[in-house]
Length: 385
Image (cartoon, rainbow, N blue to C red; front, side, top):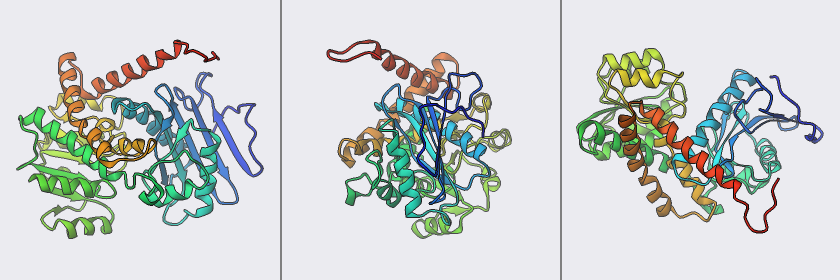
């Protein structure tokens, strides 16, 4: 992994901390403000913290614990996810920038207290430029451990003054986005009588299934982990289960909800969605578009795509509320507005003749640009530079 060493960086003994600077053309993390590689030999920690933008405020984003094949793969994921957080937080109306962290390893085998606390010290070293939370492979209990070394952590347990499981409002927000998509496509904000396929019924997907069943949808699910499927079956025995994503795509869905890892919307997947008549794509996974141009292919096939970072922002709304003292009803009310923002994006997309993903990007970039410009206003007693 190539990097540009910042002279001012002085790693502690046994710790490698490398800053990726974007002023130089072609440097890793191009477009990002700061990327730090964290290595603590004693605990086995290898992590990357990527700060994409602090234009709106401190960078908030979760910590993903995943067995990446290489540091390069981990870096790519951190860069993509942190950029997505900037756009997500902007569209959610939060005064927060975008960041993300990844820990390289198998959370079921490698995670331990020393590793999490070492990671917490790296977060603390950034002095509030980055605030962490849960993501794939990390949980509320992990945030409580990390919080023993840093104050810049959200998603802690209610016992420690935190917001608890952010998957609850993530799923609720996706459901609001799906209701808005149904309104735009079929004229009614409900999934009643529609066939919805959920790919991935883990932390978020199983909550989403509950909302869909309650709304009267016919739900089809798949997940490679049997325990996740069994949990859904126990709660909702009427749900249909298929072997894999290929079978799910062929299940003649009205709505497809990718709720696992990113890159789910590949060219073959989009082609299958078009072939089998799917009308809407709206799910919880981050970075669903496998490459630029997929959003246009979806639009050209008549498939309405609800931008992932818009509809899955309920979780970040939940943990962001924790910063000022968590109130669940207040956070839920904010997440309910995802319905209105989704409709606004569809309206803007139609007016501008662009896919919804492009309209969402434009709106997020507009807010970041306008709020960032406020820094040119010198407040009384403030110093420039």
